[in-house]
Image (cartoon, rainbow, N blue to C red; front, side):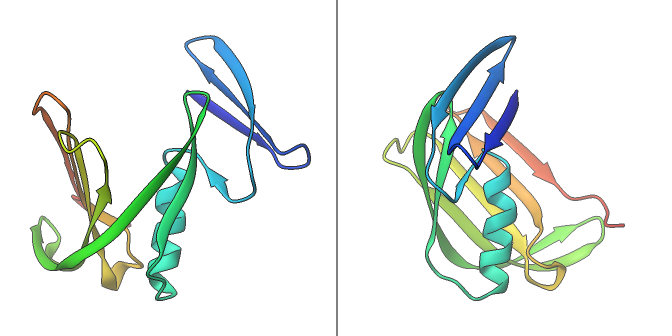
Length: 129
């Protein structure tokens, strides 16, 4: 997937598997990975409104996140104090959770995604350079 924002013209070009489409987007629109960096920055600044506009598949989507609680996560680099953040979805069959390290500028140290069929993908940090 390739995403190219053209802020001068207020558009984004998406290319997936050789197929390209362009759509108009408002300011402060992100791709499906870029919003995580913005969420990290927002948490560092103490913001509580974690709502992001995402350009995805030719559509503009709204991702709403909520801080659920703090949680200690055991990892290969030690036990890390995190904020557990959940993406709020209308489709309750899917779930995305982020454990963001408070002492490491809120980098995701654990990410878990459950798809609509119950399959789970989990990422867990192994090191920091």
